[in-house]
Amino acid sequence: MPFILLLYIVSYLDRFNVSLAGLQMSKELGFSDSVFGLGSGIFFIGYFLLEIPGGVLAEVWSARKWIARILLTWGFLASATGFIHTAQQFYWARFFLGVAEAGFVPGILVYLSHWYRPEDRGKAIAIFFAGIPASQALGGPLAAVLLRIHWLGLAGWRWLLILEGIPAVVLGIITLFYLTERPQKAKWLQPDEREWLAGELEKEQASKTERISAWRALADPRVLLLAAILFLGLNSNYGVSLWLPQMVQRLSTFDVSKVSLIASIPSLCSLPLMLLVGWHSDRSGERIWHTVIPRLLSAASLIVVFFSTVSGHIWLSVAMLSLATIGFYCAHPAFWPLPNVFLGRAAAAASLGLINSFGNLGGFLGPYMLGALSDRTGGFGPGLLYLAGCSLTSGLLVLVVGSVAGLKRRTRSS
Image 1 (cartoon, rainbow, N blue to C red):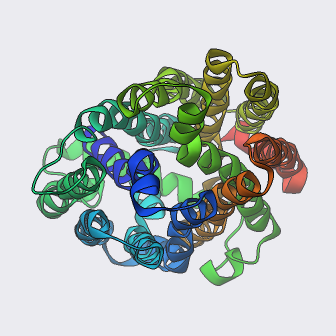
Image 2: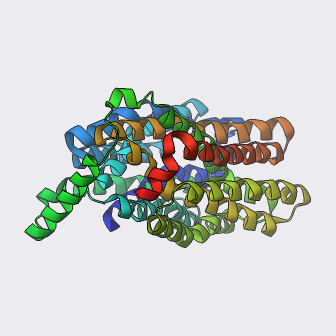
Image 3: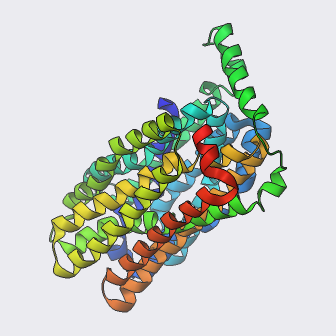
């Protein structure tokens, strides 16, 4: 798990460092809010294209090799983004970065299902998704240093993008030799431990009440509903994450280094609470309310941010953005085990790809809408209300999932 966590930290550094690079990049290249929002979000259009095949390949081929391939290609493309000069180059670099990274999250989730029993899976997923706030908490201080440099005639934002792509390439090579595919191949476990764990995972598959194909899973109403929930939730999540540094910059008179450090506060606050929610969800066996309450917390916090930005209260805005971020990330540990509750292994792998790919289209729409509404209205207020509405609707739809096909009962019994 420490290695898996490290991979996700690097993944999110390369995905979100553009939000911090934008503190200098937009001014140097003359990008409007609409251009920056579109370029930031277009990553998820490329991401959408290969998510479903990525989850299936991790199940039927090799999760280890698939994850390594993803790391190598996205590392090269992440560094290449540091050499852009026009809006069109920005769009294409972000699009192909999304294509390169597609399949990583479902691949990891499939990999974790090969190692963790249902009653332990929420904690494992919480540790994995802790890479999101951890990367943003780390990215702020790193950006505060890298944005100050000016080597070989290149501005700090370019070095930020170039240097942060290199670890992915190195870790891609290590992954091929380090990760073990399944418990049966783990030489570092005792024979009786391997047999016990493999037996427990087989019991899980034998206990599935439904056996549907991977293709049928993609049309399952519960899977489509989960995809819609993630789509709405990630509108808010990525809308805030990708715009947070520029929101803080415009609300204050701080320089880019201070803004980078302040922007890391929300993620730093959410990290321990995310792990706590994953632990408690596993201990109680409850998934629905552990997903609903964080979504509603995010919606309420963003509404408060709307009023605090109008009145210019920067620290109240940062505090409420921290609460909203806590809600975004605390919803993950209980949400992602849900497909495995009612689907077989191959069907769950395909559904994870669909849910993540469709859901991440929200990562395109949220940042774009915030930028477009900012250009049109001259402020972030209307965009924040849009994001709050998405988070609220996402939370309410989770309650619908809980009533479909007895899912509440199954999550408790799992």
